[in-house]
Image (cartoon, rainbow, N blue to C red):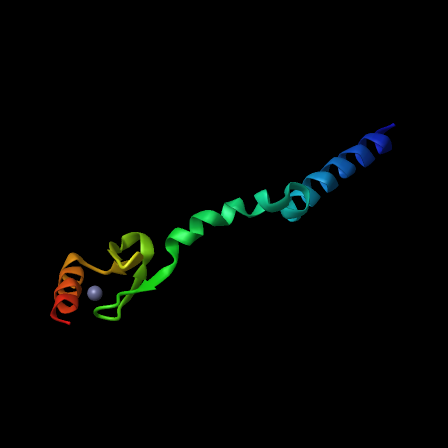
Length: 86
Ligand SMILES: [Zn+2]
């Protein structure tokens, strides 16, 4: 009788492990949702000074429909100034 309980437990553990190891297989694309947050941590390059920094820390600026990100307000202002000179 104990053996049956043991086998049942092993089977439950196996199922739990399987769903944990292969979440994408059992949940489809939803399994990748855990990674969505990491997109905020993507590194972008300041087009003015060339420094790399996390996108979420950047100062966004819309230029011709494109979002550019700057490391600081200073770089953004200088970039705007340099664009106007052209
Ligand atoms: Zn900068």
